[in-house]
Amino acid sequence: MLLANLRSQCGALSRLFQYTTLLDCSPFLRSFGTATKTEFRLMGEKLEDLPSISKISDNVVRVLGQNPSKFTLQGPSRTPPLFRFIPSDIDYNHLTGTNTYILGTQVPYVLLDTAEGKPEYPPILSSALDTLPTPLTPLPDISDIIVSHWHIDHIGGLPSVLSLLLSRWQTRNPTLPSTSYPAPRLHKFPIPQDVTGIAATKHNHLSEVVESIPQGTFTPTAEGNTFHDLRDNQLFRSSSPTIRVLHTPGHTIDSISLDIADDRALYTADTVLGQGTAVFEDLGLYLQSLNKMLEYGKNDTAGYQILYPCHGPVVKNGRELISTYIKHRLEREEQILQVLRGKPTEGGNWTIWTIVKVIYASYPENLWLPAARSIELHLLKLKRDRVVQRLGGEGVDTAWGLVSRTPSPSL
Image (cartoon, rainbow, N blue to C red; front, side):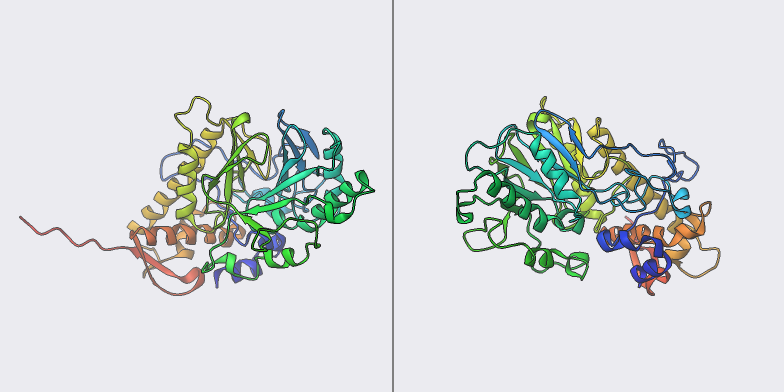
């Protein structure tokens, strides 16, 4: 299968695959005869360095997850040769580490995501909490933890973070029994029980993480469930500032964004990144979510302007970047359709591989296999749109063609 081929051929990317499973290494190519506005940015270009702890507004403190890989540019690293040729249309999720955010102006606060579970993260988070007003009563530091989606670099830190928060509370309240600890509530958008795709595979470590959470460190639902289910358009009043939940699937089936109205900011998690572009499980859903985010509060004079992503710096021109994301995906879709309108030079039908060879002809061949996954996702979206059809084959040799249109009867 294509994903297996990607893993075997792109061994250097194995760590990325275990978290994202999808890798879009496709550059922002020039449309046929028409240059795109975006210039190529190579991985060798230095990304913005971010401090481990940053107070980015009166309401928000950003805390880095301390999970940079050897591919990151947020810490000391050397770019592997492969990545010196990869332009900006790539998953930067694990090249820059995970941003987590503390929301609020007074205790208890709300924590957005928990990073990967690296041992270096809890001390940094604790230091960040120490910079904020300390509870003078038995209140906890954090009352609620919101998880943006199921990927391990967002949920993996739950056990260690919850243990840290209990320890901090016990230190402040040595005479109180642990049973009186007001443990945080955990919130997440539910994954449908009948879900298929990546979320239903071994790459989803959510159940393993939940099983490793120490008892007594979180407050379950009345039914005994670990997570309190989030819903679209839910107004989350447990925090200051108030936030609103937007279900924005595509990157994953359970991905959410959060409207932080007091900051005029949209927390985009992995749906829109601070640098580079995001990967996605379902392109159709992803484009719908991008359009939903673009239109959300568009006519509101107090609508969001900036983005708080889970990877990379704060985005100042939020709607402009979201529009760029949409534009690039539609440009790629049109490129694929233009290829399918022509005839393969090798004869027969177009396959994923022969499409890649045309669109990526001027790029190193070691990028072609990762790019093939992006092409496949575009084709699957076009198939659901009834524009193309699958003609057989497997993996990169899967053949595709345009759907034949029945001619209108003559009048």
